[in-house]
Image (cartoon, rainbow over all chains, first blue to last red):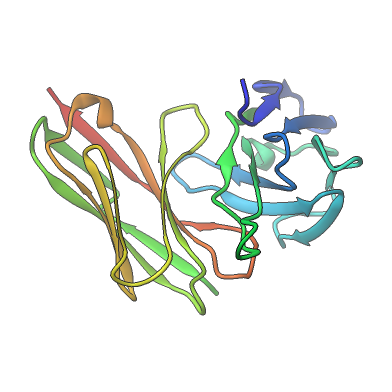
Length: 118
Length: 110
């Protein structure tokens, strides 16, 4: 399987606990994105990396959220002290650069991690 | 702030009944408009990218078009397997995030 993978697919936790999600992008995609999607809404941007550098973070990303991509390959998203409002689908996407233009291709999404905070 | 509005919120069609889904946008400096399909409980699946007004792309029963203010996803003779949520997104930074609409839930009855 050469697509974007995410682990776990489902996570149920109690309020106040910490959780960590992992994303493995398509190999050789140097850009990696995190989005959050709640029921009936489109995905909302959280943050993105180019290689290991975190280039942009949304205002949605509170201090309880942290993301890393230490070696420019897989990425982790950690949520500390989870709240019920954190319940959502967390989506990861990756993209590659178009050599001729320098722009980036479309983003390919993984299956998501469904988080439920009780 | 970039805004993307999709309409209608939901659409029910009979198999074979062609229709169009609308995506209107208000952005500064469009650098790509994207259509995705999303099945329940799954991640979005890429369909099309459009870059400039007048551009059109086709794939099987789907055809996407773009003007300066909106994009349409035309579905010709839909089948039940076309039932899904269709998401529209815009990119305005040089190489940055996507801003999505809420999506249109399409149901095709046999």
